[in-house]
Image (cartoon, rainbow, N blue to C red; front, side):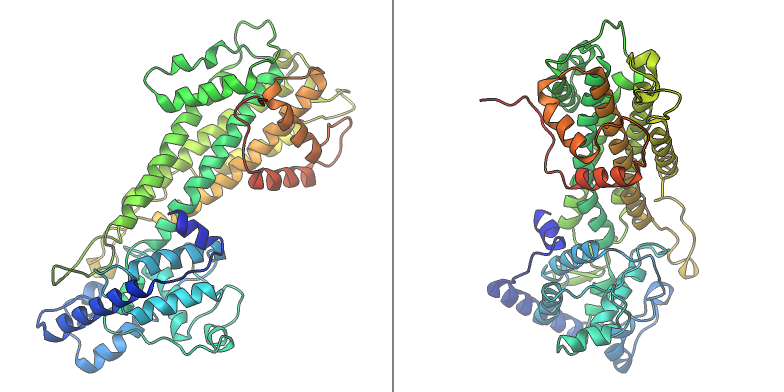
Length: 478
């Protein structure tokens, strides 16, 4: 999966010559089985969906594989970003190299070359009601025929011509292979899970900064309170280490939002790890349908990405709960009854609004985030005259997860600003392990001495947080 992420980021692809020879040899076996066999092979010598029982003549078969990529391209914008398209191409290339697909070495090389020359089709991100991903994958791979459009708005024919490339004509079974499986749902899982893990790290930092700025009691963050949960124990230990050396105030108990963040973050970590493992299992299983196994063509259900979709739904719900806690912690920072600081974290309450408007921005982001917690994977409707009577809307779940991550990132940045402002107003050095983070936030968003437009600075902090390589986990040593 790391290789797929690197390719998504722009890394070039090189195919091993011995591997290509093995692919070519397996292609000959598959072609022989198609020629010699008298049995129907779904999507090769038959129609698809409700028309699977319709046998195709030899003449019809010659055009069928190309036609599969055209008639199903009924999607539209919004389009997947280039990063995601490259990932789905990498996953499909991996499939083409597997023996059960029986694809040609020419098909694999054509796809690898398109990855290397920056060929990025316009692929629908939503609006697919098929049992698998046939609609968006048709858009992705009809461009190999010179049909459809590219992400930059040019035609696929122009994109191929500008590269001096002739359109690719898929051979027997290759058209079905291009549009089978669930590579887009797998792309979402592979790319969104590490983004979520990085955001959990940033939330651990935000939690620690708020604890430090409030001077909240530290006892509740003892790792031994995690019981048999090693993930929670690690989160508690991280927070305890980050806040060690700060100056707790004489409080009996902090508000619930300040105390329960570790539990929500541990659960979110667990869900994201499960999503990562789901993607790993999906990559290891045959998803082509039909697959060529033990000399026979066998239909599969690899297109039904139920586990990926439901895991992504669970991740979005977990992120929503983390967002709720973060917004509440921020509100406690603004409340002088809990912080012991000037109301709304302004040196001049009344004439100045302080950070109350920033909290309202966080509330707006949370409202949008909460709406994404409803499962997107559910909602099957009959299609193909009843032949396709169940769908899992994993693509929609992936898009909801992408949006949920963005909303939580903005919420987290709002809390970081508030925690830094509270730290400045308290006038104490703070926990040693957090001082670099206070300094980093202050460089992007200086202390708010009087009201100013914080929108651009919040946007800058979101960008800085997205690209920040790591979150401190312990005081500096040396």
